[in-house]
Length: 344
Image 1 (cartoon, one colour):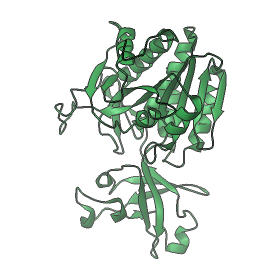
Image 2: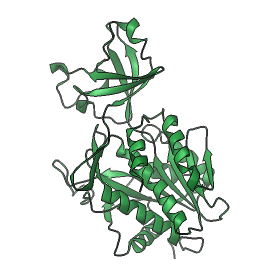
Image 3: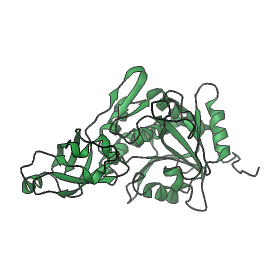
Image 4: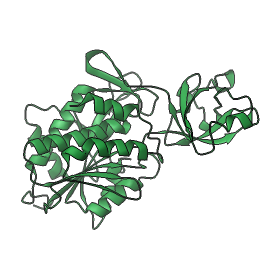
């Protein structure tokens, strides 16, 4: 695994709707490992192994992160913002943010006062101070529509844990790209299409268009899921999920049972895995890919995550490695002869 590339993904700006700068870094990283790289007007990047192979597996992980966008500049120079995805506004007051203006990033601080000292704080109740004298001064640095994210960076923790913003889902983008590299090293013969999708946190558009264009035989969404091993969580909701317990296979109404069983066989005794159960929508790229074409065989593999949609999320690097290994084994095991018919 290349930690340098992982940290590049996690420390870059990719607020939903503003993913292209990071997608360009994905292209540069993957050029030496792919037979072909495709892009589309939505902003997706698809790294491809064996593009002429008749049997195709699409791995999807979204590259966009939650954040905010500038919506208004007040007369006094304070910035007002709207949400880009499901941010938890109550975690922002008193913390630094970065606003990406036309002339470069601008540091700001989210105003803290008694007025915002409440759990149910809304994004439109936040104020951002960039040190501007007034509105005219502020407009020298930022403008309406500029993206904003918390000013946090990837940091290593004890016992192989990692803290960063946007592990959801750039940590999983890293997983699918590394899985492609590892599958190639092992002589994978099928067509592998690893797509870093755009817009999952806001519209889901990227996954839909990727699935429609690739027309895969199997689509695997790789996203994060809620760990249930810290205060305030309840394993009765969907199952016990622990950091360090391995990737999570999702029992859902859209997940293909035969794909899941093959994943378990690929894991064997060496790769740990966990299970969670959700009925209905998964709120991941799987929901969109499942409905493309005439219907696509779909499954969801998840990375356990603490503090989802907060400025500092936490995952285990052991789970990242196990997820890469599981997917690489899967890609080298499945082919056009694999029986995926649920009636057999």
